[in-house]
Image 1: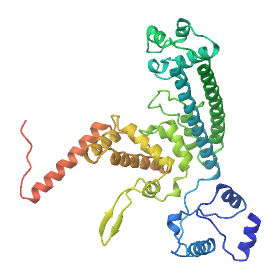
Image 2 (image 1 turned 30 degrees about the horizontal axis):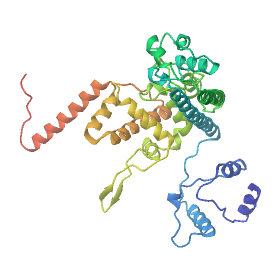
Image 3 (image 1 turned 30 degrees about the vertical axis):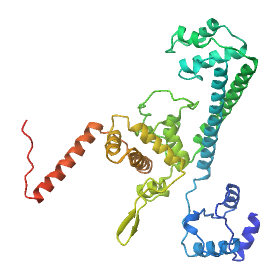
Image 4 (image 1 turned 90 degrees about the vertical axis):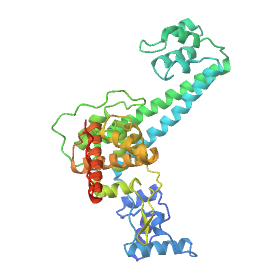
Length: 394
């Protein structure tokens, strides 16, 4: 295919791209030295009434010859490899979650209410008890001995929840669900090995940082965490600690690097970056009048991760948390999430491109600045109306 395209291109014939370039064709052409441009179909709409493959190819060739087509973002080959491994890991975790539900269903069919007394059935206590049931144990007194000392539920509560009606078919369902869950956990561990190796091979052009890794903001262990230290691997690769930004944990930071890459020069400014993420207002202006300023719809996984980070940061006592709560009370939660996600995206962009260290001034500092700004506005309004704004005596 690549040889045919090269022969046709020498004769000056335009190549025939489709509205969505498949990954294999893109990678093959790129490997043979072609500068492949992935174009958004929204930017290359054909003239109405001429929608055929030939006319579509001719129209795209003419637009590209005039420089009217913008190339969509596609990460470098090594970053795309990291992205593929990370997406595969997420897919495997989704499959494993389905089998956790199958385990819970089998337990309920046997009248075992373990998932009501244990916070997580895949935790230390839950899995020990489930594996004992699969191994043939039916005595509640024997099963409750597998309770971990850190479990908040009492021995009596767990024992009462393990008095059930064991049927062979339901135990068989539980056995298969546990086997499939273990299989996917093994596959996830293999993905972790590939991700760790790929992170070590990424070409960033940055010297290893001389300063030690900063202290982590949060030390809580996340469920479905990686088998290696993601913070340390990212810090060695990027030279900055992205987790110092509030809302960006190790997983979200790795997700953003895998989806956006580490070369922020692909976007001239932070505004271009947030617009690409569909977190900036999509203004529609006609005759000097703004018809709409809604953000565009997006299926970007990076934008989704930033929105989740914004929801989490809204509960913290930080400047970004104060910003989220103020907007949420004024314009609603949905718009506050988008605005906060945009702020986090700007911090991510500036940290990677310019090496700016994020320093949180705190929620109190933010609220005081906001109060002072409102006070200054009221003072100017009063002066414009020939009034004097005076503070209330203590």
